[in-house]
Image (cartoon, rainbow, N blue to C red):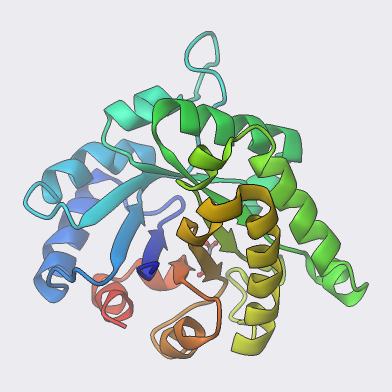
Length: 249
Ligand code: PGA
């Protein structure tokens, strides 16, 4: 059985001091639960504080929001997978819609980043999702499957089994417009079917999270939807009380 995964993507919020204050409140409100996984993706500069804050709480996994696909070299401003792992990250977001649509990241880069993460022992959380015009044009399936195949292209089934997938329809991210649980489910079922083909027996180990305007009011219904194994939460994860409520869902 897959455990539900509750993941917080802080994006470019909560530097080291804010992260420390956040964790004081959050850890007081969220007791250890063994029936779920909680992951937080802070900005990279806050990872050190987060490692210190979670020393007594190994149930909280830390992630990094982006990596470069090379292990080292002349790439000013970039962070590699082995460095992120050394700094305490265990998971990495790959292909988040803001990386794709604000920074122009292409499928080929997500492929290389997933492979780099796997090499370094970081679990990639590959984000896939269609834009509003693509949904309206009936292209959701084509876009999501293309992104999925690209991200997994260089991985063998053993590495695929370490992955997490996040379905995040672009039109739902940060807009307050959440997918209906049944619409999210329909895409999750599609992704599950593709994973079965790509990863064979190991596919059952891969959780598929939903993301896009998740909040304390809609988290339970989304999590209860068929084939939704977890939630990736942006805006609503920035408040420690709210995030504790969602993590307890
Ligand atoms: P949101 O962001 O919850 O603010 O919509 C989700 C995400 O981008 O992962």
